[in-house]
Length: 211
Image (tube, rainbow, N blue to C red; front, side):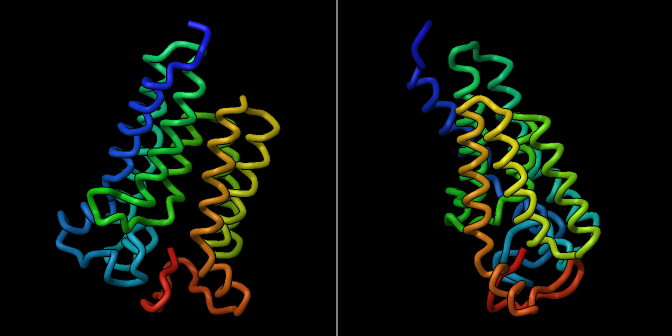
């Protein structure tokens, strides 16, 4: 097979989107009897908001679940699809799992910022890019205690490295995810400029979602 198998790529994209649409934050909150993270705390269904609502254990479960739903579709695709479709399918799996998290069909299309899911997808598509991005996030979070600033820094680093080191389909998928991550943090960027962004562990104003 010398040409891309577009029907297979469409199936991969749809399946990955459905996996990504499983909102770990909402499911974890329901199982643990916590408030719905879409309407409590910052209003964002992500690990940082779950940390505020339910503590470290609930946040870890959410974080791991979000990361795995980005990673596993890419790993599965890499194992079962041969070239020349493998790289394109890996890019589609990672990107659409991420899009599922942002716009989950099972939860009224109200998703989170996608940081952990993007990290998982990047680890599967381009391990070096994913590891460097995660280290960048952790380093920035440790130095500043701003989850949003850490995500923005990691997104820029990931897009830059993927463009330099990865095949075109992977570089495109990572770059699109990085751009969407930055756009999803527009409110955080405004608060960072105003000096009003809450740090990790601090309570956020519900009127304008943070992480």
